[in-house]
Image (cartoon, rainbow, N blue to C red):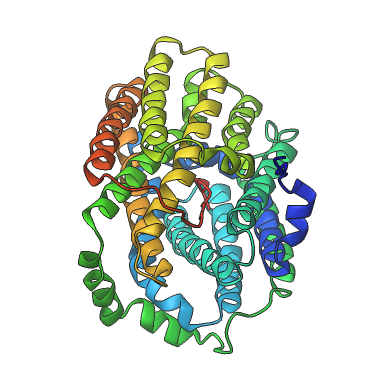
Length: 426
């Protein structure tokens, strides 16, 4: 008689999540809750100050450009210090960021806006890279579910924050939202104080900055690049394209919506539809293993291509909601499918290094995407962005088909690591 195999229930899996990861998830929940008040309208906020699509795209790209400066060396440096202390430092930076965004909106100052965006970019790469390292350090048991639980809490906070602000977004200036961001950063700091430390090495800000901007660490990061296989870099190319499409589409959702005469509340609803699939990360993980990676990646890039083409010909508000949800679903599944391949190809115990290389490609994508979309919007209109996204998705489907075929990878079991598709303005 065959024995029936049962899978653990959701509640029992949550109970097994290590307490430190639950705390980190709570920290990111309240952190993202605050940004849910402002992020869905970030491009509108910037465009209100710049009054120019091309400048809007340029300023948005500055956010990722600032993070790119630290992306490679950060992976080499953060493990030398207590992760908890670095997270606290980045949250204090966010208090400054929220204040500067409020001042920039209140005074309509481009100079203050640029300073806010640059500090925002630095603090963003620090908190997300370090929180990733913190969770990695406390893995126990079911790593797939543990990280999906953390990612879902992160996305849920953002989702609830956006939902909460819909009642007032139509009648208050967007920059007032940054006062709410500051409030929730303070709450996050109180929660962060309860996190267990990861190292006895206390944070020395002078040493941290010295190491981050040290040519030695940067050279060490560059010297590690040739040790990765060509197939690893094919995966990096897929991630680059994925985030180019994601950021180019997501960050301009408010302006896409305004093009279709959507209200701020309707734009917020579209943003919520775009975030919903991230909340389902836990459930995606249960069936992704049933499909070969080559088939899944090629198929979903083709779906992404078709969605963008359909959107060119059916530009209704209802279809905008539907496409946003399906695009987000496709990108989320692709992200949690490709990421494990990247980490499985990294040398043993060098996850931070592989993460730094991946994040560098993501930053390059999120620098170039708003520039390209902003230029296309100023020149020919937003519809040309959809053509571009469709062509890129089709090209990556072809790349994935031949890359996986050429490598002839044998199936092997790898620990699943997932990362959320991060929001635009934080």
